[in-house]
Length: 173
Image (cartoon, rainbow, N blue to C red):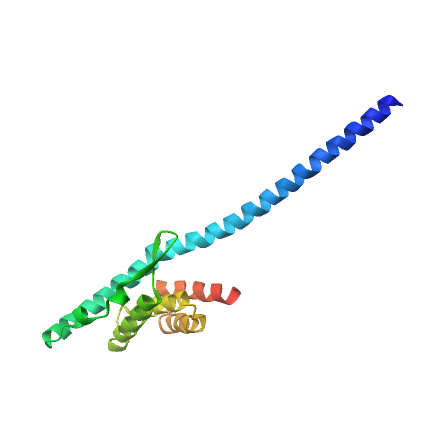
């Protein structure tokens, strides 16, 4: 009888110790899953900053340089007269992100370049970058429109494939 009582007590104590440990493991697994999801979002942001925004910014600077040359020839101090606020960036987690003003300026510059040479070799890239900027501004409808332009107007380009992947991603969100 004493042996049975001791075994039951031991079994009960073991159960009381194991259940919290199992619950803690489940909680850790859930935390790890949410951390992985947050990590993948952060990786996408890093990738966007390091690839797309760098290319957008370079293209905008190139277009602004062309405009500056034209304006300088006309005798106006174009880029020097621009508002310095447009060059400001905001920081998030010690990373430089383009401000809304900078994104809007990029859209404006890219659309002007696109209007000047709508059938130019850079047209699919410019449309894709416009869509990317719209997406970063939270204007997904405009982003879808420009991704659609890329896939429809330039179907056999790598930009079209990227745009289609982004359209699919936006559709599933």
